[in-house]
Image 1 (tube, helix red, strand yellow):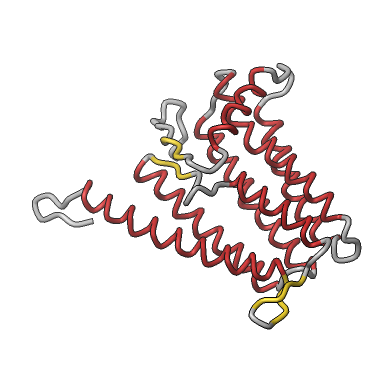
Image 2 (cartoon, rainbow, N blue to C red):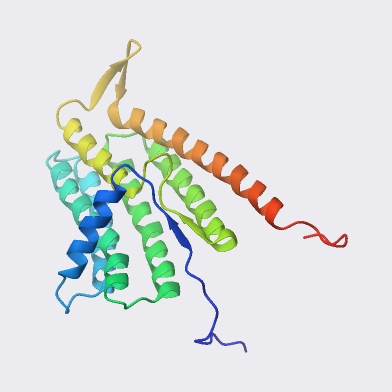
Length: 233
């Protein structure tokens, strides 16, 4: 039976991050990582980020009976940013990196946490369940494309069109505050739930991101890996 050996070759992918707040965020994360107590390691932060995002989903579900849970959800989103964004930075700053382990655990956690977040939205009463489900599907499809590009091209795309995870958290936090005052808005003579509109825009946006990235990466791989001597894939 084959066993995983410690000398398995693994080249960390180049991180592509060009979001609106990425420059300031990177400086802030490095500053915090350098001042983090030694008793806190990146695993603790990963767990914090995971649990916080799951709890944000729980807050959305509970907001159905008490809208004030939307404010608690903002706190959870902030804690999710702290844990999810700082864990990798802390590992790099403290030179305690485990690239394969970190990449795998981080993204399995993100996948499960996304299910909780979108599931909570579907139960909240503030968004049509079908839209929440399609947002989850679109997110997972875009994630799959990103992971495949990471494996085949060695490039890990963290942001699209100046938007990354941090910008999405900020938009959700603003949306939560808006829901407390205007959960339904007028659009072209019709009353539409705010998060239904935001969710539909997110689905379309992620769909375009997926299509453009897939075409771009397919063309790049086609050019970088030409057929030789009549061989095929």
